[in-house]
Image (cartoon, rainbow, N blue to C red; front, side, top):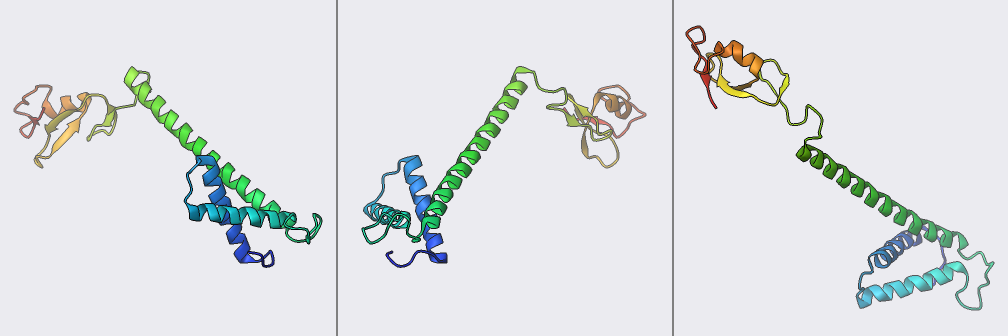
Length: 167
């Protein structure tokens, strides 16, 4: 890790170290010895980037101050994105719970829980399952349509020979 600072490999290493640091710091994960070694290498790498690694490199030396800033920016952006995603999930969960609570307590909108009639397509709280024509397919019809397909009689009448109530 003591080679020159810069290049695509170092950027990927910085991203990997930033994720490791963020995960370990945020979740307080117990790290294995290999991960601990990686973390100490990262700290050495950070020290080298900051220009405070040994006496041969000065604070103002052009040895990677930009890379250090980039590491800090990557860590902050990862933390910010994780926090934002967490807050979005939390808000969505709260909204879903509020919607369920409203349905349970009867405060939901007037169309919540309604299903469409298969004949007129209007939403209704109460549908009647019945056979209405020669196809003998079961349909769910609203009260207004039910009067037309059954003649207004639960068992049908002579004018509606294909009608059959289905419960």
